[in-house]
Image (cartoon, rainbow over all chains, first blue to last red; front, side, top):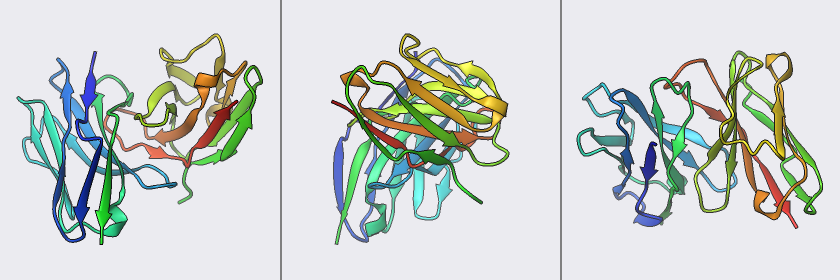
Length: 115
Length: 114
């Protein structure tokens, strides 16, 4: 069975600094998708970034980028120039090909951006 | 574009009572998901619909939970009877059909069972 592990329950970063959130996963599949979702306090969960396993190039979305290491089964999220609005729970999620969208989530990392 | 709507936002019930949650997905999204998010954990899929058919309900406690999606649009999730361990946020999400698509989440319903 696939599992997703986020080893950092909480992290904090100063505004304008860079922070990296870790995620590892376990699967025997070769084709799959990985996601980072953000859940701000009392607000809806939204997609931050998405990576397809068959693409070697790391995904980027403005200040957000990933370091995808397929052999190591690692998928970390880097947030550059952190902003107060980045304060949220961040969830790593796995979607295997053929699951039709059945996401498996990690337990999340609570990120606090301090002024 | 209107997002995923859920109601109620909060619900407090006593154990052994019943409760129902409603979800209206984004227009055009054939796939609808119900997740349970217990405090301190990531969401766990309860049931997934494609149009009005069930794709995956392997983690739905079928002795007490039921869900339906009539006409392939709105959906309701029911718990009867509720247990203390059902206290959680129930999230509804929708997406286009297929793997790898972004899921759009609603605000959730926070259920407290006393």
